[in-house]
Image (cartoon, rainbow, N blue to C red; front, side):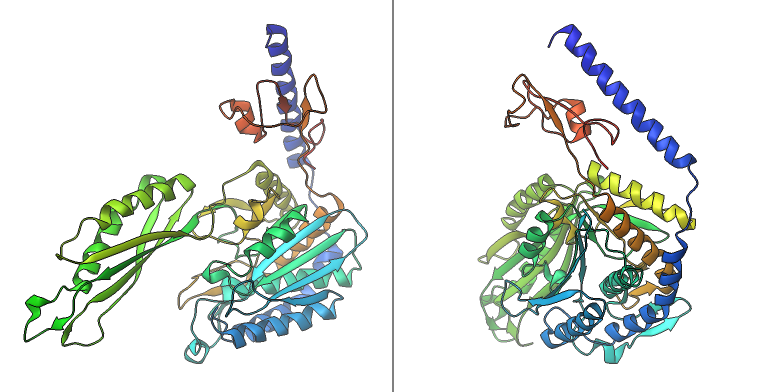
Amino acid sequence: MTSLGTNRRQAEIGLCIAIVLLGILGSRITDAREDARVMTAVKACEADARSLLQQLVQIDSGTADISGVTAVGATLKTELEHIGADVERVHASVADLGDNVVATLTGRGRGRILLIAHIDTVFPHGTVAQRPYTVVGERGIGPGAGDDKAGAVTAVCALRVLHQLDFRDYARITLILNSNEETGSLGTRDLIRAKAKESDVAINLERGVPPDGVEVTRKGSAIITIEVTGRAAHSGLEPEKGRNAVVEASHQALQLSSLANPARETTVNVTMIEGGNAVNVIPDHAIVKADVRAFTPEEFDRVENGLKRAAADTIVPDTQIRASLTRNFPPWPRAASTDALLARAQKLYAEIGGKLTGVAVGSSADVAFAAETGTPSIDGLGIRGGGAHGPEDYADLSSIVPRVYLLTRMLMDLGRNPIRLQIEINTENKHAAPTPPWRPQDPFCRKAQAPCRDDIHAIVFSRFLRCKMS
């Protein structure tokens, strides 16, 4: 590139940055005003939202509890049909899972919006009887209250508000209620990808993160399985003839901690160990399972390679080890399009005095399947909550009004002005398509998250310039 061309490019980038900064500063100076009609309708929905949450939590709906998942889905199907949605049950693509529920609202505007929540929990059948839904202060506590039945409630209430206001300035709003998220969405991930490809934006309704955050990046997940085969023998008469699979499995489990990497926030946690079937028999079989979380695919590669080396290090002679790593949710890296959605959400939340932050979390979720299609995505717009997967799983009931207001205003804003990233490619042949090999080492290309080649000049502009992120 010539010196003149380089200077021109730098000038264009500088102009882009200057206008973006002016836009940011201008948006901060502008006074945000509450939409009174929306707020009135949201407050009118609060009591019903509390009641619906209790109703849903009082149904056991662990992923394997198909009757419970079906009952939760049927309850929400009725709620959604009351506001005019077309609702269908979609079979999971894997056997022995409950049906997904897909609701569609068709408007007359431009934006195509995908909402995602899940209706299964990690808790086995009978948990509700042991720990029924209770309200302590402003916490609604019960199995699946915050993770993620509150997300479904948030969606229903926001869509009801749009219906009551006769707001239809969107092309389409699709809501997927996933029946099997807690076991990796194996029966729903293809459905999520397909609907995301048909949408301008995807909003996952996992819990809001206290004190008032939304998720902008998540770790991926994987499962380590170690199967140990030994030799059975009488534990009192001739234990020396046995090869204790449980002892070897314990050794293997202890080794797994070395595969974690705190500096990169990669975690490896043993969560299950099984072995033996009688107290007087040297066990000949044992299984260890561990949960792996990481922010990058490269870290999963590293853990998988380390697992192979660890499995070769045994302490019980003549035992056989089979070790594998199964990847589940992909990592969801932070993206410029997510930051743009966060900026929109912050501006809308400021209408009611809210201050929203973007946070990275160690858990995995369906947003990753939507985002990997290239659709701009954001997560954590559900009611705030905490204690996921434990006895204190809760939804923050005081956040119903502000969080439903936020989601409603996001739907209105994205319906009118869908977010799109339109990159103008400047080449001698303006019809040329950007094809590999890319130049990811170009810092501007990395910043813009745009494909770049030596012969392709991609400049990302704000809404004021040729690359429009509206």
